[in-house]
Image (cartoon, rainbow, N blue to C red; front, side, top):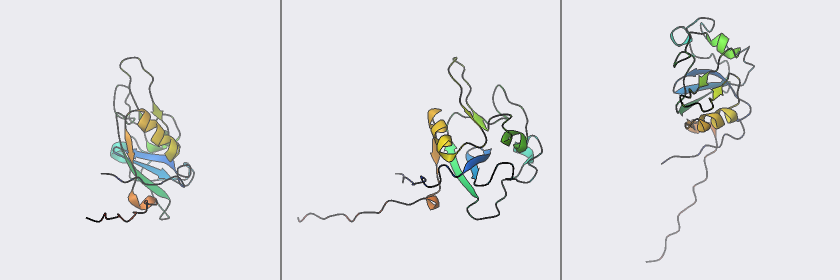
Amino acid sequence: MFTRVDLSAVQTVYRLCYVRTPWAWFTRIPLDQQWGEHWERAPYMREAGLPYSDKPDQILKVGFDGPLLSPEEGEHAHPCSVQEVNARHVPWLRTESYLGGPTIHIMAGVTLRRFTELVELAGGMVYAPLGWGELPEVQPMSHAAS
């Protein structure tokens, strides 16, 4: 069983700023102003900390799955810093096509909406926190007379 969370109000407000599989962090502030501990160091998976958040709604963290690789994984892997990824030198996530099909690149700064579309296009799914949306109202069940 799962519950759908309505994130329509924030789908274009938050932009991708950090990934540590299976989590993706989105920020409301410009990418060049979003920071975390040691974001200038490479490789980011070993050196960098999570995004800083000065306000309760500055960062949105979502889960995801699917056949997506970080900059330090796969055939074209190389160490890079969060700063380099957020400058769009490499994608945060990508697919690798071994059969000649198109590859998917998820770059820093994509909106939550576009991130969800691209993860689903790759065959994955995005999981949002329940606290970040309106849950549907539960309708009372009608009982038939027996």
